[in-house]
Image (tube, rainbow over all chains, first blue to last red; front, side, top):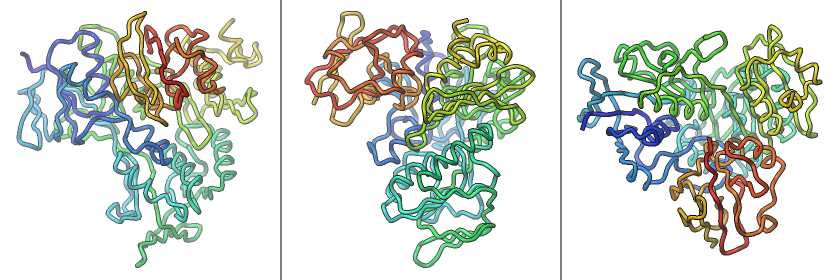
Amino acid sequence: MTPGVVIIGAGHAGIELADALRACDYAGSITVVDQQTGAPYQRPPLSKELLGGGDDAPLPLRSDAFFEQSSIRLRADVAVSIDRAAKSVSLASGDSLAYDTLVLATGARARRLSLFDPAQPAIHELRSVDDARALSRALTEDARVVVVGGGFIGLELAAVAAHRCAAVTVIERGTRVLGRVVSPEMSDAMIARHRNAGVDVRLDTQVEDVVVRGDGCVSVCTSAGDVIANTVVVGVGVEPRSELAERAGLAVRDGIVVDASLRTSDHAIFAIGDVARFPGGRDGRSVRLESVPNATDQARHLAKLICGAREHYRSQPWFWSVQGADRVQIVGIASSDDDSRRIPARREDGVVILRHSNGLLRAVETLNEPGLHVAARKVLAAGPVPMAALAAVQYDLRAYRAA
Amino acid sequence: MTIVRFLTGDDVVSEIDLPTGVSVMRAAVTAGVPGIVGECGGQAMCATCHVYVVAPPMGSLPEVSEDEDEMLDSTAAPREPESRLSCQLKDIACDEVVLRLPERQL
């Protein structure tokens, strides 16, 4: 048998690729290498269900039987280096794996801040199921929780903690929450929800020092005063795990750089998922997207390429977040200088914001409006949407769809 | 304990036990029922765990929430009156549930 496909990373992207390869009748060998032992699992529920005190077993990406029946080999090992000339990957165990096609689906790791020592038991991050379990144990009734970072992960777990714990403070250095991903209008809506739920959200606040006290509590010293906590969660975004690619001399720039076929600067090596920087932005600009739909879309596309198709990767990015009872959904990629137009929501607790520039609709953000999110996806999938045409139907996304 | 049978056409392709408090999607993904994806992890966000309910009558299942109702408009296979998202089906008060799998989830 030929060496086949070697996939580094058993997250959503890597496992979806293995499955999709078999689905398009790829007959060669498929090996997935990941340092985690145990069955590959889904991450999105970690910051929501699992943390909320739900089922302690993570939701698997596929059943054990699936891997066996599909002849997909999982190896608990760490890829250390790539010998591109010999087309082989060296593993920490000392073994090496030959490949015809190598796929880097290494994902991202939680970004760390030097002030916060992850070895301290009171200091947490949230990326793996072990992180989620440790954090879930810490979120007790009398816990005083500080969340550093007002992004998706930070706010998702602040919402869970607000439900369970005595006090929750979110410290965000920017002037608004979710600043990287949504409009100022949606940031305002979300901050109001969290404050209503009892979360103390502090904007424009820098962490200046972190002191672990003798009793195990942590004093988080900020530009706006000290906050005492017994549980601190650092949720300040992620960093692409691109070291392997870098060491192999592949092009890396905040992610592994790939072309429209998801191919790296080496013909036999591809990258997909959170780690891949691909030309999927507006006007062909390169972007790196941190989302499950992006990971699985790219995986399915790459499977087709490996099985012989010849088409460029095109997709419509979408994102979601669950924050307490609130559900945020976004379709499209907005740029920070896009304009925003708030249009009437259908539900009392709903918010709908259109992001637009140069007369075209670029993205739609919704809060508690899944129906309008679905309509927006269909509208944007059909091609460019002039704002004037939307205005003509009073910004009714469903009417526009029908027109 | 409820038994859930999955049909493709009229053929039973899988049969699983549904423990209390566990959604049909989760039980199906864990057991490897082909044709249930559940890409969003069970938050009624992706509509890839779509099923058609054959039995029991729709009225004896947990009620369809507004969120589920709206997300059902984005299933890959046609929505029917019997359509549900299986991530929202749990704690079903009957011994046997029969669900037909759609032709596609994506």
